Length: 250
Image 1: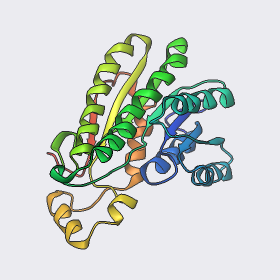
Image 2: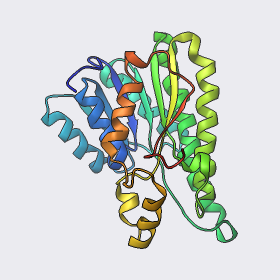
Image 3: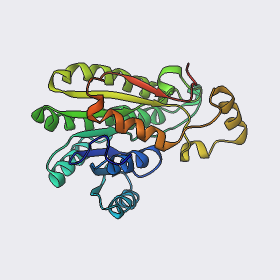
Image 4: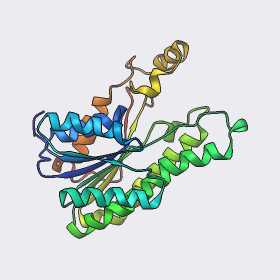
């Protein structure tokens, strides 16, 4: 795609950027010309992705942060601004699962998922909006899930967090639209990542049978959608939850 979406000179922060969809998004934005701050709990894992970015001649930094902690989420945004002088794009991708049937779910498993997947997005978005509002420009993309709209058995905590993220997306989009800041969510279905790699063959067959396209998606396909949403071409799209799931929810 080259630099068709015109992200040259833009600065992006990607949470959960060390693997899976987050890594693909970080590499995709970098390929479009953006400078990328990659956040992960594991600094070494984030540094490996930065090395991939730098190998192409682009710029990136790795930041270790637990975004469920307010001070660390704010420190992440500050690190990106300090290193690159501005902030144009925030991708809230960090997420965890603690699966189990609700009847046996522990409170700490509920809290952990809500803290990272929803509260973390609150902390990073609030911090990112400060420089974006000053610049009267910005792009925020929240990585949601079809779990947030259809519900997944055994994932009441994850489904609730993603449904909350969808509502959060719509509310914040209305708050900042007059400042030329867009806020959208991308809701992937089943994507080939470490998360789906651990599924049993029986579960994979069951899920594949429900997907009209008959396959799991690729991380790069999600990344391409994010790259579009943060581009100038998407400047009139805000408050949307865009599903990318091979027809699962049609």
